[in-house]
Structures are given as structure tokens and as C-alpha cells.
Length: 235
Image: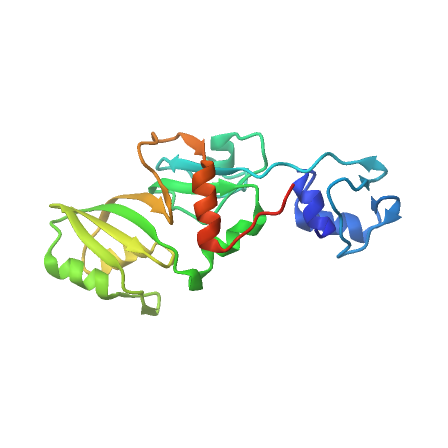
């Protein structure tokens, strides 16, 4: 794998920071000075400033039931950032976002390669939400939401929308625009009172308590990677 990824996988620093180390001549691979784009493999003697860096980390894949008020950012100067909230031993980051005023399922990982396959729009991967609004849900509202709504200058993709209760509905999206569900509801004169994500692709929130997280099971990981056509690097 590329040397910047190798270094980041050890937890030493980010890929961008690793590039700077390589560019300044501070990195060696098996005694040879590394160049940008150099390859390194497990078992290689990789050193920064003459000090051998640690073994590569195992990848972790987490599901968190994010509470309202937690911000989906790795910026640690932001109060209530998701990384400090979890306090995981690994250097993890969220896959995508869930608004500060929304709650529910969000995935986190230290595997930077899996992020784009999950988030890329052409994948049309399903995300499911339960939404509570400020007035009764009508048939015309459900129909309009499902057919697509003009927000942010274009029409949203058709989606599955079903009534759950008098003021509650379920919606399954295959795209992820900024505050999409809230903007869609506002287009029909509705205000969102509660928004909870309950599924991302094959990963379900289930009965995971608010503020709690868990590792994805082997079966969940296998199914997720198969859906993505993704094969994690061996570390």
C-alpha cells in the first residue's frame, strides 16, 4: 500500500501529515528514503526520524446511537464532537453526517477506504428514518414526499414514504443532501419535531440505547462489504 496510508494505519498521523513527512525526507522504508507514492507492506521496517513506527492497526467499524446535541465532526475544538463523545482508543471518524439536532444510527471507522463506497451518490444506498412532524400526516403529503421535492435547486430522488402514526412517518432515502428531510417537509409547510435514523444499508439501529455504541458483527461487516463490492486491506 502507499506509504502515506501505511503510516496513517499505524495511528501515527493522518495521510496528509504523512505526505509532509515523506516529502521532507523524514521517512525510510527498509533503510531507503521513502518518496511520495512509495509502497510499503506489512513487515517492512518503516521509520520516521529514525524511529520505527508501530504495527498497523486493526480496522474497526462501529454503530452509534447518536443523541441530539452531538456534532458529527472530528474537530476536537467543537464542543460535543462525536469523537470525544465516544472516546474510542482508535483514531476513528464518522462515515457521513447526522445533524446535531437529529438522533439515531451513524457509522464510524478508522478505515478511510470504506467511506467513499458508502457515501458516493451513484451507489443509491438506503438510509431509513422515523420522523415526527408538527401536524397530522396526510395522504397528499406522503405522496408528494415520495415523488420528489424541489430543494436546493433540484428535485430529490423518488423515495419510499409510509405513515407510522398520526404525526409520524417512515422515509427511506437513497441520497444525502444537506438537511434533506427537514427541507422536504418545510416545502409542504411541515416542521420536523424529531428525526431518528434507524438504518444505514444493512446496518440497523435496533434496540441500541441512545449514546451507546457497538462493534459491527462479522456478519454485518461481510454483508456490508459485499453490497459495496469492497475488500478491506489486510492489516
